Image (cartoon, rainbow, N blue to C red; front, side, top):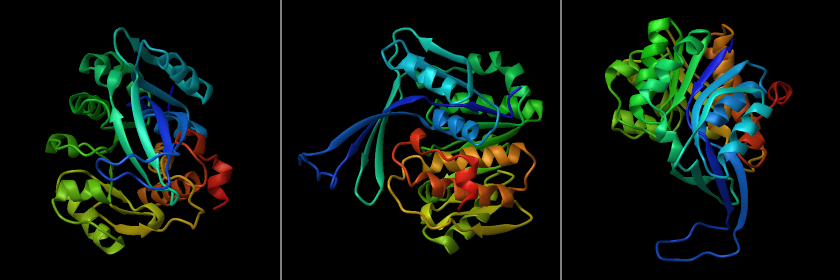
Length: 301
């Protein structure tokens, strides 16, 4: 039985380290290329497993040269991969990530087989979802599939966390089932149709997000940590200082850590504080899954 059940994406990451990003029509040379296992779903599943949780994942890969290694990697990281399948004729999802010397990144994703995960696949996994404490999903699979996963979790009394990344317009009936909704400043701004920048604005925004339906909301703030609101309280949990090497996996480390703590009965405030430390630990190393911290590394911050 898994404590955390993840429905989400599995990608092959291609990371380019560049001195600066090109302007439109410009070519920038001397980039360094590296490849990594990725996808928000896979990263969050691996993050939760790295922190000691029992984790199962439902996802899809292609029948190309990347699919098999992606599944093996997750299995080696302690994730139950029995519900991950190859889709004939599909390409494994890919992400093209550009990282500048300050550690900031831009990402372009080709979803591939991630969009082949269907509502029927969710229904077929109902028993496995029902054994978990927490369902985790993101938006790199189809929104309809995320909706079905959340509906199944609600039907079974399973807590649902959705990281609305990348942001989509989603129905209120989805948002009402979330506890919490997890977004960054840009995603919060998308939902609220207003600028969200800085801790004070984020605190206000987290409370406003509750008006859209979720039982609780969390806004991640990068180096500034995160804010939360759950109807009864709200607050800011700062992140410890860390030397930034690559921010690519920080958000997924945060979500995985949050899921672990909530699955084990922690309050939202306690879980967010722990997740902020996990996110900070993740920026000190390169890659998404390669940077995921151990419990000891999180506690050391």
